[in-house]
Length: 407
Image (cartoon, rainbow, N blue to C red; front, side):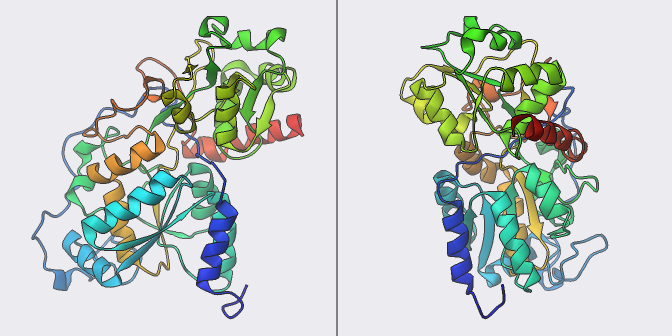
C-alpha cells in the first residue's frame, strides 16, 4: 500500500465492507478467584479540579505525562485542544447500537465529531499494520477485546500510555472503581484500561426443547442423547469460544473437552448471531459460548432461553469490547484522550454498556438493568480470561489444543 494508490476514504470503506455482517463480541474476564474486582479504595488519583492550571500552560509536557507531543495536561486544556482538532477516529464493536449512540452522545457533550470504525478488531489490526508500514496513521482510540489489544496493538508498540491522561475527575477518582482505581490490565498498568467485567456463561439452553433440569452439571452434556444438538463459537480462534472452552478445560480437563467438542459432534461457527439464531429456533438447542447481547432480541420476543450456572464448570468473566486505549502518532491525540476519559466516565459507560450488554466496573453505575446471568456473583470462581498472564500463556496453549483437536 502506498499513499498515492489508495485514498483514506477508500481504506475506510474497505474496512467497513470487510466488517459488514460480522457479529463479534470479544471475550474475557476478571478475577479468577473472585466474582468481581476487589473492594474499592477511597481517595482519588489527585486529578486537578476544574479551573486549576490555565489552558495556556496545559500543553507543556509534565513529568510522567503522556508520551505524545502536544497533548494537554489539564482537563480544561485537553478539551480545548480536542475541540480545535475537531474530530476523533475510534475503532469499536460492529453492532449498530454503538455505531449510532457513541458518536451522537460524544458530539452532544463536546461538539467533536466521532468517526466510528465498527468491526472485527483482528481485521482492523491487519489493515492498520499496512497503513503504518506506509507511514499512514488514521486511528486515534480503540475500544476492543483483550485478544487483539494485547497480542497485536500493545505488542506491536502502537499504543501510548493512557493513565497519565486520565484528567477527568469523574474518571480519575479511585473511589469510583471496584478494583480501587481505574483498571489497567497490562503489566505496566498504564496503557490498557478495562471498563467492563461480565460473566460469559458456559451454557445456553432453549428450555422449550431442553429444560435446565436436564443439564444439572457439565457432565450431563456428555449424554449421548445430546449428540448433534450442541453448537458453539469456534474455540480454536480468538473470541468468546476460546474463553468459554478455556474455562471448561481448566475445570474439567482435556479429556472432558475432547469428549464434549469432538465426541458430541458440536457444530461450530465464527458468527455470534448464528449461535443465537440456532439456539432460539431450536436447530441446536444447546449452545456453548453464546453471548447474551445477541440473545436479547429473542428473549424479548418471548423465546425461553436460559443460561444456568453449572456447579462443576464455572463460566468465564470478560470485558467484551471494553478495553480502552489511545494510539501513538494519532492524528487527533487530544480528542483521543478526551474520548478515553469520557467512555470510562459514568456518563460514557451508561451510554455504552447497554449497547454491549456488559457490566460496568464502576461503583456508581447501576447494573440492575443487565440480565442476572451476566452479573458476577459472590463465591463463584470464574476464569479471568482478560488477565494478561492468562492471555499470553494458558489461553494460547488451549486455543492451539482446540485447533489441533477440531481441524
